[in-house]
Length: 528
Image 1: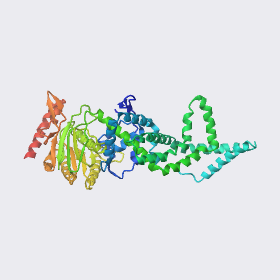
Image 2 (image 1 turned 90 degrees about the horizontal axis):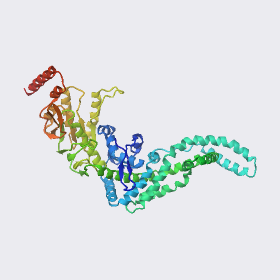
Image 3 (image 1 turned 180 degrees about the vertical axis):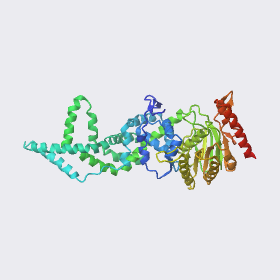
Image 4 (image 1 turned 60 degrees about the horizontal axis):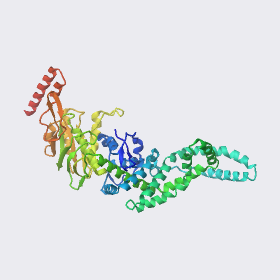
């Protein structure tokens, strides 16, 4: 389990705490509606689940604000087309590591946005706003009439009768508007907090940005109209209960809330870009601090070498961050893809995931769980965790057919791709599985694409040895125990132990002997 990091107020460092409840419905809100036009790739839901990126996100998330958490999630789900985002984040990391006092100040300020309501700030520039009702003129007229009646009551007591008639009508409109108000009661106060924090951070010479400064100034004028969102929070004590009722009555009588709300909404609508600018400013700073904290917690990491050479992938010491004492492995592909053989639980699928995670995070957050990682900028696609879709009445095989079809379509595009596949076409017979597998893998391997695929079908190695480098994972049986070293080794799997493992698990001797004889006969017929 992994959770948010809280600040150590004395050192200004983020530190591990008990895990929070990660509400991904809120965390992903910004990502789902964000502008992705300039991105090379949006990580698909399938690849996100195949590589367990939700758990990876929980591990790398060191943010102290809801806005920072949303932005970090957006970052790991998007592959940029160039290095600009990574360069900005690296520059922030370098600067904060040279100025610890500023780092502590920034952490203290940004932690003020560690509030559930801050998840809704993005909706102010991403979603549609309420439209003023066509009968809004009635609200304005009733408000003016109420003000006039109150003023006249000081001169003519008969005006009180008009107030008595107006009050129930205005109360109805007031509470009708409460539903409208509640949609913004969470987001707008946090917008003001965000803007205030950004204003303070921009005063520092290094963090100063003319564009963001202009946006902060544009949004500052909103604060004066915000009393309707602040006043209720100040009336918490029992002594203030009567005052709260009185203020509510005044707001209802003069219809203050609907008039101010529909005055604010056009302002927000016209300043979406300014809100987005400040949001991104805070988000990038928090992402930089989170990545820096992550790196400090790792046994080792590297900044990837994003190369221009196509169809090349090289890494040493790559490991899985979520596996305790994860075994590190190397691989060097130059012009070829990789076919991995080995028994179940030997490490094939985990290694494929390690490569996928590092290729994504290397491009997304400039951080790889490895000693060295070199790869070109590429898209990542996967077919690892496929299951029957019972609700759609799809069999495992048919679901796999549709998934692989999507990969074939992606391979035809101009971009370089990394395809990650585990046990291709498990849902069909051996002969057709091998035949279809060879044809599909050869097709995916065209152009500048790289394929990492695991298989139990050793025959595939013979068909693909000219275009795929062969690797295997193996186990050793010692003293009637199965031992895995989880190390990748060059070449095809030399021996198999599946039947031997049946024997170790006390299968009837008759079963083991018959299986051994049949295996020898089948193997002999293949050689013949």
